[in-house]
Image (cartoon, rainbow, N blue to C red; front, top):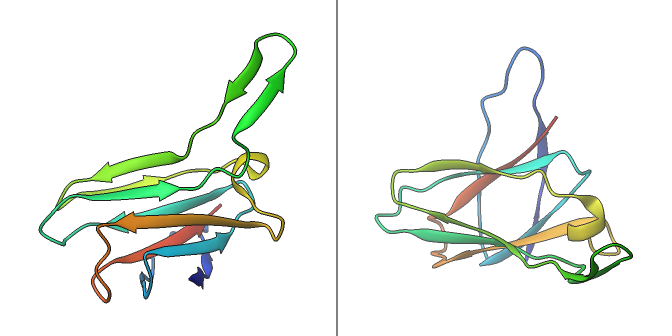
Length: 116
């Protein structure tokens, strides 16, 4: 698992630098204003799954609520931004948010983590 370095979106704009992934599962420091930028040119659909750290919430008004992982299927040729990710739901104890791409191909899949 690799930790992807985030890139800040500034007023003048940003041309994101993609990080080639070396594992199916990766993570990034999440401040609650982070997004995953993914451009799929693999020839097939990919699914990005963002792991929820909190799966059950006890709400006084609605009772027990279930939080599932966030998923996005990305068709070939599509570019997506996924996020932001609430810190309380997606961060682990080290402030990291974990995501996986399936069907992952080493050297083919690349992302940028962007924040505002």
